[in-house]
Image (cartoon, rainbow, N blue to C red):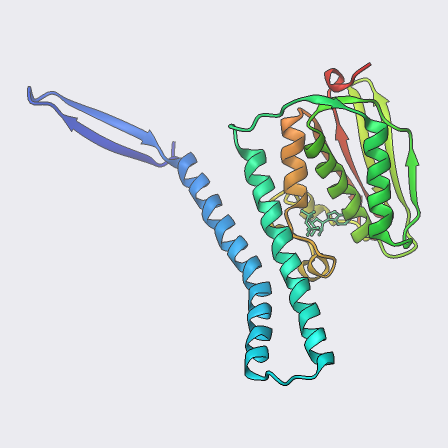
Amino acid sequence: HRNRKLIAHIIQFENRRQILVTHDITESERIDMMRRDFIANASHELRTPLTVINGFLEISSMQPDLDVKTRTAHLKLMTEQGHRMQSLVDDMLTLTRLESVDFPVRPEHINMTALMEQLVADMNGLSMGKHPLTFINEGPDLMGSMDELRSAFSNLVSNAVRYTPAGGNITISWTNTEAGPKFMVKDSGIGIGSEHLFRLTERFYRVDKSRSRETQGTGLGLAIVKHVALRHKAQLTIDSTPDVGSTFALQFPIEAAIL
Ligand code: ADP
């Protein structure tokens, strides 16, 4: 095939017999490229907070007599950047674990009512009263990984909070479809142009870099959601209209529900 890349080796035996061995490197090259991209992006993301922290540390050592107010302000900025690095590294480790075949899902019985209560409490804290959070139906108990599902749900809801201007609405709901239980997060936020939709779950892909950073985004949230969905045989769908809002849904298979 024209677009395929092959590596060929010739193995020669003493009896003059020769064998030609070919490997298709198209796939391995693609994986290699993705890995290089990931390392480049991750390094770049970590470099910004590191530069800020190092800058203030240098000021601190060169100007030991700085007044308390300035020093406190510098410490605050350094702490913020430290937290930023922490979230990035945490998300990168989570993704690595989710992608590893050595860590299959260990299914457990998930009490969805408790999980949803906790989620809503966390999200009300994040939103700080800026968005009315409506919650419809508790959802069925599921078999799955509690940590992974908690992380997927909270990524989707925190995105809704972060990309919806104050006063907008966010609705979390569970419905029973023929295919199985469906979790939905609907927001009346900034929405996403269709040209971005198919790339959203790529690591570090953002529609608006500055908005993502301002709201403490790592750019890895939807990549995490995608992997959690894959591991639970759930399907992630995104439906969005710019300036109107977005709906993110996770459709679980019927077998996942505990009846
Ligand atoms: P981030 O940490 O940047 O939010 P994500 O992987 O969670 O990273 O999301 C990727 C991008 O998708 C975001 O940067 C944002 O542009 C877009 N996005 C995600 N959720 C929403 C939403 N509910 N409304 C509008 N845009 C969203």
